[in-house]
Length: 377
Ligand code: SF4
Image 1 (cartoon, rainbow, N blue to C red):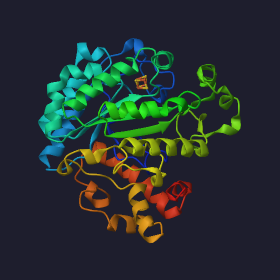
Image 2: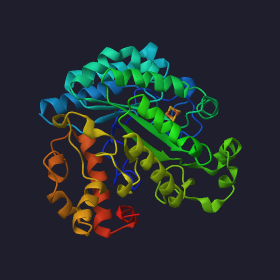
Image 3: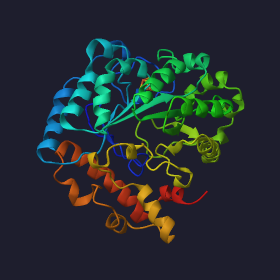
């Protein structure tokens, strides 16, 4: 929780642009049963508190970025906890972060299940948004309130999230709906209704990510699912990754199911005029959004990007050859940070960004498995 950079791994490093994270609280009281953040958080929800020293670390980093005249990659608020849990009303740690982003011109991607709490600081959000420094992502796994109560017992009901997100988008804030996790047997029948709702609230993009969980949790999904058979067929699942750090027995639905569900979502998004992307998947043929996180909705002068497999895929589309890392970085526009350009960035973030870069480089140089996901489906 103390690190401002997501840990490098083969599941993250090849794909992700938003590696800089801010976790303002030590845990999450929403208690979603599928939460992967629970594997990484040290604190029990019962001892929930603002993350010690987080604001001081941020001030140090933001000051250094500002003083050195650097353009940052966008920061994410948050990745392992919800930044707008009820404790925010009392402690205001996320509010403090947003004020710092305004002060130092830092682009921010907010991701929450509680936009109804975030709306209390609408004037601050608007201030950030007016400078093109804000993307507001609202997360929903299912739109049925009854089902959501079982999956996300302490989070606000989906309708409340959508209503608050609609208010945000009416104020001109770029809202993205994160449809995640895609849980087999629980959401397939509601896909069109969900995309219609996203359109209705003024969302600009859908980002989706499939379930990943330990087999021990499957009983709960199986009880709730319309088609529970999927949880009994081991062949329906695959390892999340041989290299995932903790825990080691994480499964996700097989690639065939993911592709078929993503295709349905992509087609529905096209029907309703929304951009579509998948989180940490590759499969770029299926992506219609300009950027998987929606970073293109920010002021173009406010952020830098890092190279990912997406840029390699652009080259592949044109040349039918997957580039080496050297060929890849030679084609990048100046708003990308990599190799020597990373040097002026504060050490705390530079070291880990370099480790992420090393993994991407290895994938391209050693032609590992991940490259398969660049090829057409
Ligand atoms: S809101 Fe997010 S971080 Fe909090 S428990 Fe749910 S999935 Fe985990």
